[in-house]
Image (tube, rainbow, N blue to C red):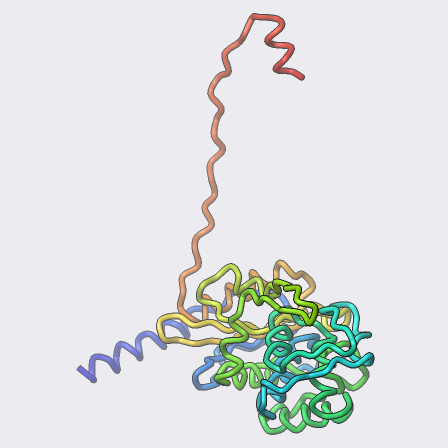
Length: 293
């Protein structure tokens, strides 16, 4: 029985390797097996470039590993000015780290990233030190971070290969795993109102096998997306950086996940044009006039 299973597994691996990966857009692309970190496919994986809000995964990982998610964070005036994406938090309001962390990974507000970073380290610069220490621990040797939200800054960059390492760590974190899979989150503000936050990762909204990760965009980074998926016991992570089209990004991520997980893509059905049946001619003049209006 074991002998049979070995050859079945070997056949599956060979069959997968014989199937070329789909053609996708983006400057840098990496696909890994999320269970062992092995690279299944890569294109330009080591080019250093901005990665936008996908680096909020590192912010989240640092916060989680520092502990005490029930700790109350008091919003300060310095947290507010972080356009364009904000949750509209007001100075003096208090929220738990758990609330802010979930909002951060679901909707990606920059004011939330700043509040968490400042509360943890005392300043954004001090938090960047924690980010870089964690990145080095993960083996992200071609990355450097200077803020918690991914907004453009000199000397801030990563690579697709490094971001895949980060994504794998987040995927196996027991606290972050369910958060990145959250499609909708009711965020209760201090005044009692509730904002329903929708996850920015449309790949997860459209496909049941996609179970999370993070979007990112700035003018410099272009569209970026880290996505994870699970199917029949297989887990995979995809990284696409520097895509010029947001819609294409989600389509390409779907194709890459399907390829990595062995899910057949649904064929595109091209419907034949239907010849309309003859329309009866009505000779009643007034009725014909109404039809033309």
